[in-house]
Length: 88
Image (cartoon, rainbow, N blue to C red):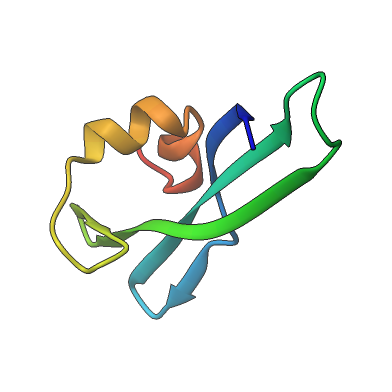
């Protein structure tokens, strides 16, 4: 069965505040569909991609497995990230 990947998009979920700590889960949405000439089908998945943690002036990012990752990579995929985290 042939599939066409129609998108892999990251988006910010709801911001969680725990005292002075701000947590921002980031989700990855992927949509796939069947190719023309084959059976018609479509699937979508929404999975955790990362979490961004802001505590005081420090901002850290962790991938879905809890490993450190580049905040710049998340900024590239989630353009409104700084506004969500109240960053200048």
